[in-house]
Image (cartoon, rainbow, N blue to C red; front, side, top):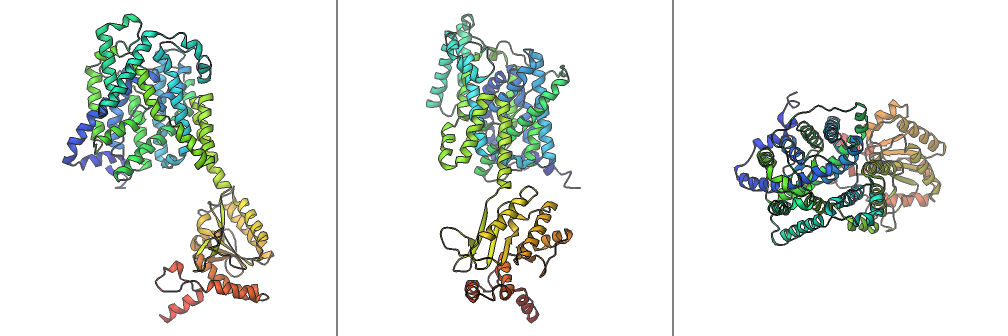
Length: 607
């Protein structure tokens, strides 16, 4: 009960801050200002991508960053608006809002709250394993597709026109018509922004290039009164605390947000965990996936309460934090305070920022997500992973972000089910030193005459139990030595009790007994003994033989050697020659001591 109410369980970030070291203060302050300088322009740009006002992007940084600092277990991770997250929200909400700006904002907040709820629910049921659910190839295809979708979508702001089509393929097919509608002053502003970004990264790589570009373009618009040339800007931006508003839309729209919010929670969490784990490994500490799920859920709920949109782990801002020596989550609190001060008191200069500059910043941010070279490299290293990544990539481009994410989740599920339903298996033998090895082409290990040693590389459950039985019977028929004893590596496959598996084992044992073949289980002696007796399966000399480990199981087969091999002295001598190679020194662990149970009993009595 005391552990249940402990701060470590519910507020691990706060516990870490209470153990703060004074030497961390200066690097944390420096990193906090650097993160704020990068997060501010990016938040405004992602607000435009989401389809809400610029101030909403700032709201989405302040409270969520503070909440994560209290609930998160990562010391370096910075949460905030993310390109993939914003693209998902825009794809879902825009059709439902039907051009109504207020409804659009309210739907965004509602979807953000639903995302936070799904994360909290997943944390409650300890589903942090979902961090590994979307494999790296699938996530690679997803992020590449999202990056290209964002880049094409921002061309309208960069070139100064408005897309009439909603989907990517239609926009690309009508590309020549749109190029003819290019607004030259807007294009010039975009090129100027790109020049500032490139020069800043080239000559001042330590500076926040996005902030430099925003300041330069806003100053140019203000000084040159460029609004008269038709260059769009953010315009007047409100300031102060967000005004709480209740959703005012038909309740039926909530049904349209449930599954997209679940997809968004999944993608946000997987993306965040990839970033958090990489920086945790770099700095030498561990993070808790279930607590991270809760922290992400609380941060999203905080964003919804503060009238913001869904957030995730921000890899670029986390990298800035780490590069500036950030040691703790105090960096997030400092950056949130700076952004909050600007949102409450200094929003007037933001009205001069041109939307073309925001489009260029988003395109440059999307380029960091783009890794087509890495995707293509999978073709040579892992062809199955390459096809998974390619299918996800093409799906996002052709069907849209949400269907692409749904397909990515299904592909991950199907990949898992395929590996579990039809896993790899192995036949085992022994080398000249008596070590159990996999039989293969290297000929180091040799099969034990008269004994088939089998390993099934997946947990046995109801949907792969029939396959296990078919494989065992097929291998027994194919073995040229006509095995009289089957040894199954139970450690690898008997991981949980399943009534269908127990039924299959009983059927297999009866079939083997009819053929005169003994069935031996190696490993999980106590569990299997309990499970088999519950299922009514006989254990012992007249039933399935249970041994504590593989070496004892192979040694046990010698107890049945005479009735098995009495007509084949050659096979018996060969078996004895192999078994005699096993080491017997007392330095070996119990699992590797190659003595019969009767010999163990005798030695115990003598002792």
